[in-house]
Length: 257
Image 1 (cartoon, helix red, strand yellow):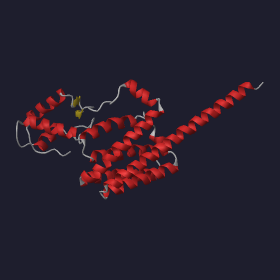
Image 2: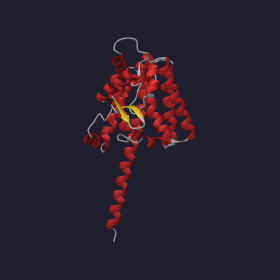
Image 3: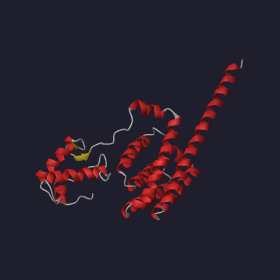
Image 4: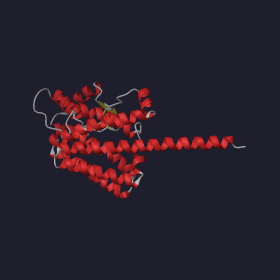
């Protein structure tokens, strides 16, 4: 974690401000455990009483939480962007899936373009590392791991865009994706042809980002999400046709003497 020694102002206030910035920028993530009190005080260059004062203030603000015997953690500051009733509505209506993909296409296209232009070398290394893990998971033919890394890859691009509003908004929405509210990513990874195509699309996105070609990165993201939408529409159409055929068969069987 990139903690920096405190230089000026009241020590506890400076500590509070620094940890707030790390949470705001997404470097400290919800559920992440802070270093021990001793280690953190040394890395910040402050006394333990000053650190405790800052931690207490951040806990009062709801940004940190303590777990008995486990330490201090970043609180779940994301929560859900939607009410439980609306989440249930999303999960039961196909139109919400395609609106979600359209929203992602616009937001992530912009994020990819910004990441190519504004992302640090470290940001791009993180994206490369996640992509390499996707390749390894693909070789092992583990759809669950590959699907989880798919989400991590996209989030790493959003993080590299350096827009804190977009970051926290999309993290909240990706939580719903992980829970299968919008669609089950693992289903898409079960088909060999689809898995090969998705990996190739992620390779194109990563290649454009590593070359810092913003327009190409945006186009690659848009092409990828267009493909996902088409695949899901085809699956939905096939499921409807199968249901209709089943109903007709059952109806015909019921009319036989």
